[in-house]
Image (cartoon, rainbow, N blue to C red):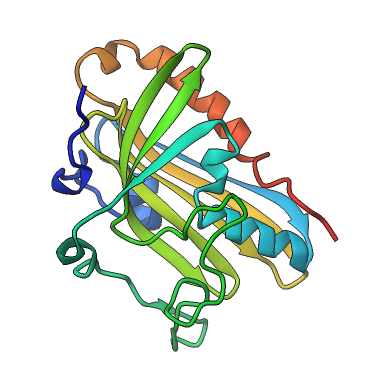
Length: 218
């Protein structure tokens, strides 16, 4: 079966950027279930460098048992992708700290290039001899000195409809934290009938995500 060209597909939900909107997380659209959890994953500069490199290069997914196949998109699509401006506490615009043109690091510890807004990918979950393809598009990237991450939205063919975000942060005391947020509901058709099973699988993978960044320590 030939896969569709993902860059041609629209996301399968309306509330794009919902995982950045406190009001939508608190009062989600009908049928959508919000989720948010923040866990301390380590301390120190080595842990921080490992965590953000892995996060921005699909490492959380790869280390949780997924295969990641990033598709090439035409330049007229990627060049027009909107990259939001970040601001510091004083309201001053913050230039991208990791993924801009002058960034030294281009690939993460798994050899994957850094994620960019507008990237489309197939995330393939494996269950013994079975696998499920999950088409997604990166809808925003956070690239600040002490806060980095991204969110992807679902494309048609994904078991869920909605958005999921992975954000790592470094606190002033050097602690490193991982926050996962999502807003999701089952996709139409058979996926809706299988929703109880999907939720169990979703919960199992979330537990893997929070242990995926157990890399080198000081």
